[in-house]
Image (cartoon, one colour):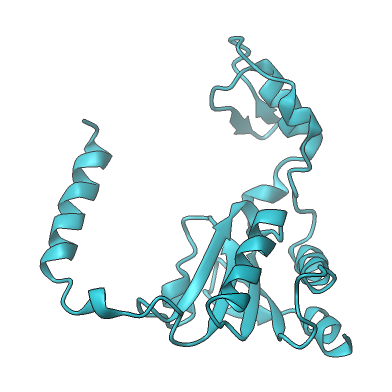
Length: 193
């Protein structure tokens, strides 16, 4: 077993010992909102949004992008579990800004092993065993976090399964300060709908 496996299991045992009455929390989030944000390990939505267990749905993926699956989760969150507001939160210094869909597709053709990056760009081991499947995916990379927040709020708002009266807010989390910076153009999209 790996060191990480053992550390996770030890941490879980400590958590279980102090679990208390959390088993009684209801399924719907108590504060009735959802956050769509990036999987970046530097982001802690519970801390930056003041959440406790049971407060909100937090949907995380690479870039915090409004993929079909993220929108599916938001719709379930609203329709079946009663969230009434959504926050789309991207961040500064996002890894999704370091490559394009073309680069990702090319790296996957070389191999399925982890790639490396340096000042000259991304590099693959080219040990074989790659796939061309990555060439046919829009990896939803990011050029500018502000533009991607606006794009994602528009994509959510224009989805036919999303009610037009649900507030959707757009933010950028600043990795250097921890501050949430509102993207007012994203909020304006929702108000105009």
